[in-house]
Amino acid sequence: MKVEVLTAKILDNNPNMDRYQLAIAVAKRTDELLNGATSKLNVSKKIKVADLALMEIAEGLIVIKGFVDIKK
Image (cartoon, rainbow, N blue to C red; front, side, top):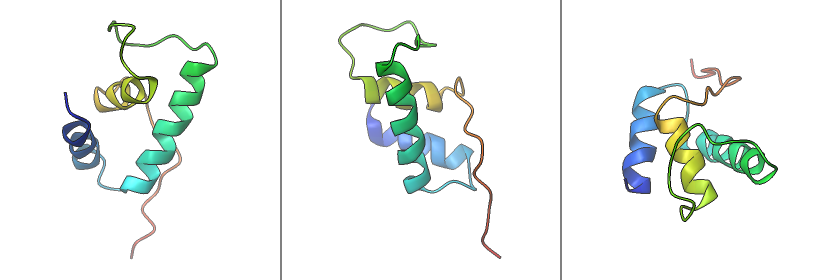
């Protein structure tokens, strides 16, 4: 699946999150994967780690906590 489609899916499902917060979440999960965390998806080893992190978030396998709606 394309990155743009995954990003749109995540942002549609999480109205309190913006693309910058998503970028932070993807970066954090990417770091975890690079430091030895096991993926929650069974995919090819040839996929980029950042794409894998984005896929995990899009599938709802990774919960992003700490983002609140501050807009009034």
